[in-house]
Image (cartoon, rainbow, N blue to C red; front, side, top):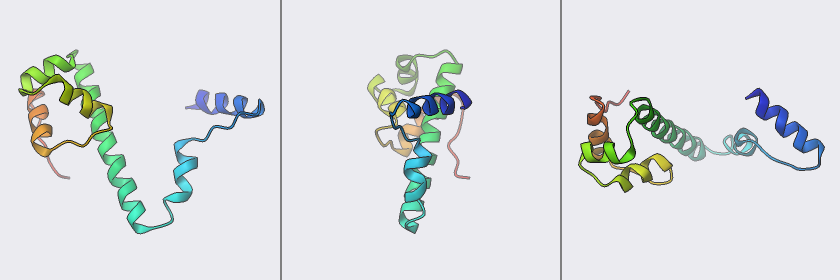
Amino acid sequence: MRNLKKHLEELRKKGLVFHTHGEVFGKLKDQSKEYQKAYKEEGARLTLVRQIRELRLKKKLTQKMVAKRANMPQSVIARLESGEHSFSLDTLQRIASVYNKKVALV
């Protein structure tokens, strides 16, 4: 993180302007309760997606291997891991079962 901040500062000195996620959305998130709720939900969804991908990599499995064990096309795993698509609870449960995990609301 420190290297990123240093790199962004160097780019700014050269006249290039880059904004971090926090800079862009930090001001917006205070604007409305609806935005705050959506922001929190999206953050939780992306965290879950990241954890699923990290678990797959930790177990040294390919998307194709996970898909076969979850009885679904590899493209479903790819779309889920991209973070750009929504997914159903059923899909999540089938993927969790590959890792002997259960889906729970906390």
